[in-house]
Length: 442
Image 1 (tube, helix red, strand yellow):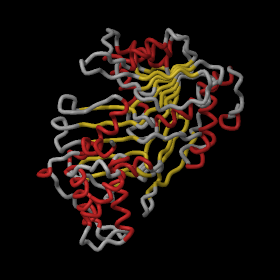
Image 2: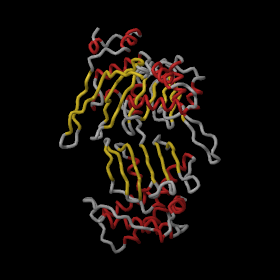
Image 3: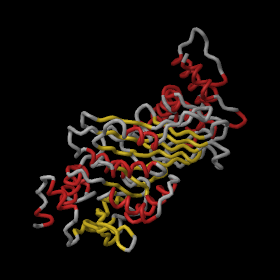
Image 4: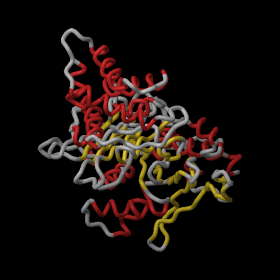
């Protein structure tokens, strides 16, 4: 019975029941009261047993009516309470409506009354929703992950999972988290942005888009670098859309986010350890295995460890047109981090040899950034041109230059095309792609 399931999942110690203080809203001036009533109704549902002759809906309604008796509530306020309780029984508690909001990209729960959302690139504190207490947060986390066979408890206080809709969930419990249960959900987008979206929102220019498309068609190896939430995966998906439909493409990710429209695509996903601490399959394991699967291109969602060496090895051994992303502050920082990752592999190779290996493997480095106003920009497109004095040499082709910030917080800037003909231009032309003359001349 669904009510029994609700009681089992959301049982909380009445002595631990704390009322959450929230900001008043114009829509419900008595929102603090409504939240308190919500908490009492939930406790009543836990404490009272449903009669065999009573339907679940009647049982819930009677408990609500009993709790709000004596309170002068308007019809909208009553409906608001009914919706809250319905979300607890049939949804994911306070997160139900946030999870259904397609405009949100991230949900961050830092405490019972400390919930943040990301909307249009901006992180905003959402005071319209709240949990009863920390126990309530844990119950919602468990309800979210139980359909995919995951669990979280004192023995396993951390979980990273992909939900049934493709969203990414990460949760941490005490004692790992010092302030209580922490929940972060990166919302799944059924349709990632395409190049037209990028052009319309000013993420890049038509020249930049045409150049990147030519690079993909010419099978140059590319790496997208940027900070957290800068849009690396979204750009990687757009670049992947330019791949030849005849290519056999293997994608490798921690959680499948790339949505390629080509027909010959093999998607591989890592696996975390089981309860015994075994059975993990890492990005590196999948990269090594992918080399035996006859790929034309290998696309790795993100490199951040020992798999970097295997990825470079694949790029250097005939798997042209491979792509990946990396967390870094910029193109130069990315190459330094790549060196470190290769050294983590335990292979005793001189640093100079590692740099030469990187220089021969990667041709294009793309920097992306989320600006202070929340908008994302391709801030740099560079090429690796060789070695100079033992260092990898890059030359920038395109750049976004910030010129100021308006009073409303919007960032002003301009895209620049350097007066420089890229070294890769000749390689692009050698592949029969010769429609960039208006950008670089003859």
